[in-house]
Length: 236
Image (tube, rainbow, N blue to C red):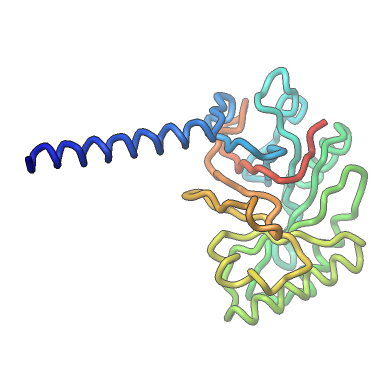
């Protein structure tokens, strides 16, 4: 009797695991080109790049007859801190403008440095252009404390919005969003990085984009790339 009960429970457990794996599989699209599982149910697929990806052949990468699924939007790094300019910014920018791709620019925030010089540094190299997506502030580093971090972030985004006329998006980890930012920026949208679990961005109107992996293979290159899905529709 006990053995039968044990076998029954074991069967239920196996069925539960199988059902979960089936559910996970059915909610992801396997991309051979990116060597990654791409979450389904979102409107657009995007990548974000910097000098770490080297010189990208954008014509090939954005050709949907060569690379699948098609990339719908791109974010490229411009600056970091007070004085660093990404070495691939100008090349990436020129290439994407020529191709007419929906793209935007981001600044990597040094959280323990003053925000005003960082905003000025970003603005000295970036100006909105055709097919421009909102600028992004990349916040990954702890501040002196949470209040200090929020104050500096607000200062940066206020300056950039005033000068550009575009309201910046805040990129950060799911942990930072939940513990430091959620509820403190009611008028701003977020881009969340979460690799180990689905942040369910469809349930939170403040979140637009989800970076679901940092380990996808960049097709026709020898580097890895971040992949993102978005609620927004950037498809042609």
